[in-house]
Amino acid sequence: MNDKKFDKIIKKLKEDSRNKSYTDRGIPPIFQVSPKAQILIIGQAPGKKVEESLIPFNDKSGEKLVQWMGIDRDTFYSEKIAILPMDFYYPGKGKTGDLPPRSFIAKEYHKDILDLMPDLKLTILIGSYSMKYYLGKGMKENLTETVRSYKEYLPKYFPIVHPSPLNFRWQKANPWFEGEVVPVLRDKVHKILADR
Image (cartoon, rainbow, N blue to C red; front, top):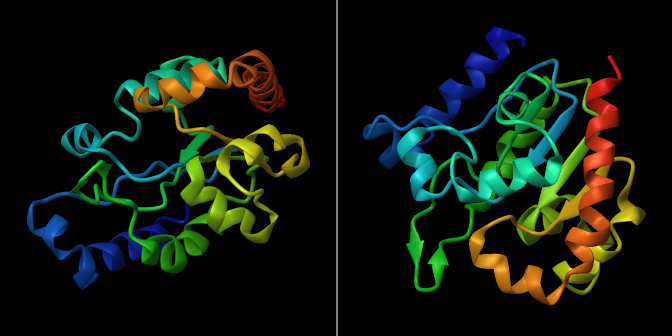
């Protein structure tokens, strides 16, 4: 990692007035990046539990994601895997769940961080926020159809549903995801990580 460039981005994030309430509480931006990363995960935003531990996906969603990818926790938190949410901070609680990620984080900070990871071979897009941002008009009419059409976005992107326990109903209603899509995701991840 170009430490100077990375430190500059961290400093900018902490000094950004829109992140002041987090910085004042000693909460840093929560993500995982490495110049050696080959797989990038772009999720929604850290949840409350993640904010408490400061470790990305350190919750039930993370357990399911690790399982879907067919890797172990040590590999997930290694320099081979990068995690860059749409918002680097917990956005707070809404009426029906967590608030959406704040849009300025991806718009103003993602590109500079992505430029520091030149060896990425696959970007896993988790949930509709990352799909809308990175696929744009290429996204289908909804998340389900986008995930079903995952082959159209390969080899660069692999869109998947959020692994949250809250999505259990969706997973039950769409058994093709775990039956057909997850094995392909697992295979892609294994091939990339084995290709040293």
